[in-house]
Image 1: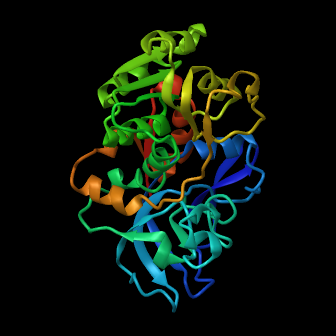
Image 2: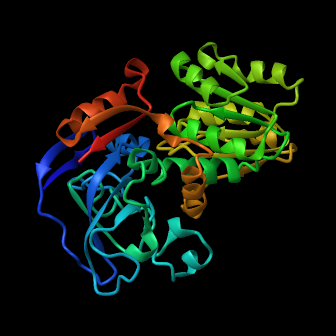
Image 3: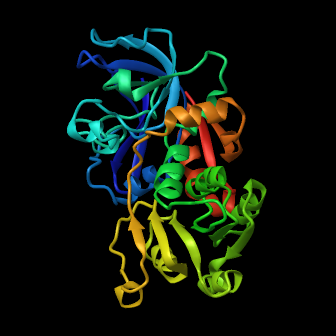
Length: 345
């Protein structure tokens, strides 16, 4: 089969690989129909995640059709259409019992990280009964790919951890796909202000269409000052960091109101300064999280009911034979205006 393989920092290539086989009785082999590229894949290519070794097939998102199952799989059969969760969960360990599936002692975020992932024609899914979701055969697969990772990540790590509440003020720093996913799902709770901050005017225009009440281009370094002007000098109740670099986290520290919550979504590859000299007396909560995908069943219902349309996040489509072009497009979003890309295997 064809697969996109990580070759070390800055290196990737399409290679021929053997079709994966059942290794454990709880496994399923899924034929990928559609997948995508995540910002985390770009972090891997930058060398930010040493857990991902050269030679790994990348990707942790997708939908497909079950090709084969192990002897202990009871929920799925070959031919079933399924959504692949970016998190593999055994459902039984200490952390899974606490609904912290991302910290499953034998699973978690392993797809495209510690085991081969979804940017291939086939993928092996451990713990299939608790790591796949059934979808109807005529479902909009492109929309559902957004539920593998990006939508639950924006919701759980940003909105839920950020304690977004009716009438509250929210600033989302980073108007890329994950920030826009947080923007879409924050509206479940009817905040009074949803301020999007980014360097890219195109993405800020998209944010307005998605429901942002205000946008700020932070190129001039005055974003915190502008937020203070918008909030009568208080700052925001929730600041969501959706980029993963020191400057954006420090911006969140600068614009948070007393009693507010900074919720981090971004994947950070370098250290960030925590300015306790300013925050020590301000009743600030800082939250971190890797998505658990505990919200996926709810989000499936919301999307099926057409309450939100995650397909709006998709800007480009490629066949698998053009996956390197897809990476180039996604990696140069400032010029290509890319958000999420769909790759059809």
